[in-house]
Length: 145
Ligand code: THU
Image 1 (spheres, rainbow, N blue to C red):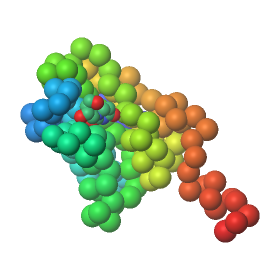
Image 2: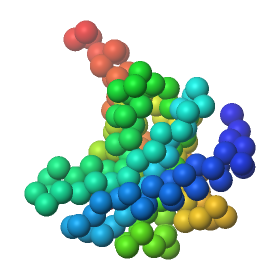
Image 3: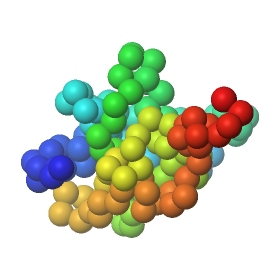
Image 4: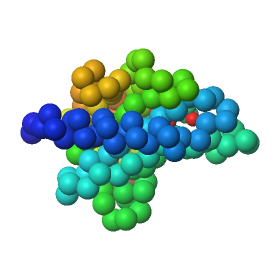
């Protein structure tokens, strides 16, 4: 399925808008994300750090927000990030966030847009970024269940 250019721009713009909410007293590395669900909603997120370091939340954890509202079918996520909120290169999702995507998305079709601005972006599938990922399918196919 093709993603319209206007939707790509909207997702990038929305992810960039989240940078202002990013709370990063530790790293000052700001990340914004937007998530298009299959029913056409757009969820938003930013990273949130903590004085105790460990409780840091990645921007992509916005996926949990969608799930907590009963929305589990995801189409595309867009991620932007950079030191001091200045976008100069692509910010790819960390391993943990890729694994969370693996739970709710079809790795063959779920798209991940990494962007610097509306003119500079790359689109990957989850399978591109998490080849041979472990997921629910492994549990269902295992003889233990
Ligand atoms: N971060 C994200 O929000 N998403 C990623 O995929 C990579 C890392 C955040 C976590 C932390 O607040 C900061 O970037 C530096 O690691």
